[in-house]
Image 1 (cartoon, each protein chain N blue to C red):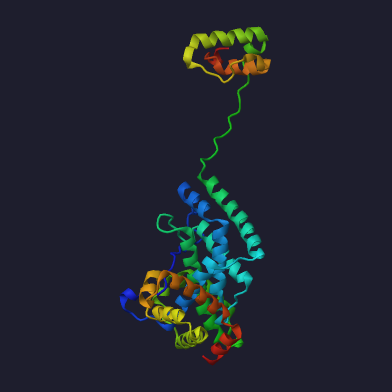
Image 2: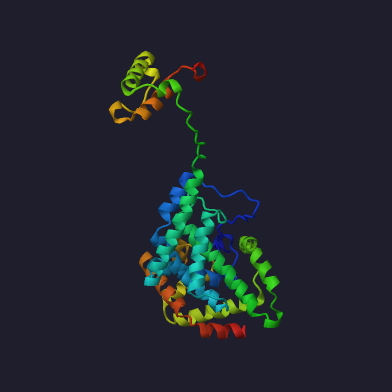
Length: 128
Length: 220
């Protein structure tokens, strides 16, 4: 209902505009009830759920979980000291090409050490 | 003419609405508790005209009006561009558009006898709601709607009585002013006078008793 086009608004337009102006004033200066407070909280929770859905939809699809291969038989026979020695030797030989998160191998179990060595060892499995 | 927030007719075959992260951040930052309550106060005031036309305008209707606009925005039924306008403006525009549509529809239904009521026609009326909302600019009011509006406006003026600033504000709106600066200019008002008159206009519309409006409606 702009007067810039010089078209006189109909009474339906005028009534709608009066109602709109009154509603704007009510929105700005009116007061909400306790029920409104509760309703708003509930609606907010509902909207949060939908927003979370939208955020999840932006995430890349989850990568398929790869099943670990069985540990080589040759490693199963090694004791703790031998495992640590092999890991140290491999790390030194490969230099920066190999990295692992555990700086202190004492925190790892024997099986963890076997799994780590199995992953580090560049020897093809078929060679066993 | 009414301005409408653009609506997209999403059917089952449409791809799901997936806004980008910036859009989601903007929505979440702006869809605050204060915005929701402000929108409800706005909707409550707008519902008075819907009720005056014979429509349902109880607290359930008012709450649903706000909730539907917000969820329709989140589902992409209503298009909101955060760069174009704040969420609050978008929400109030959409509530205005839908409540106007509801009051027009209520006015039409009130002039039909109960025997003539056909639920299939009503169902199709709901189906075309989105499209018809977009056609407000081309909406041609019926003679009944014009008469009814004339009488309600006359009643508002009677309620305003000798409140000259409010009467000047009504005159400005009657001339086609819609924006605050436009109304202030046409009504020759200072910002302070406008502010006070705006609040009084709101209280005045709030006072429009339903029985008076219903009486006007039956005579229209």
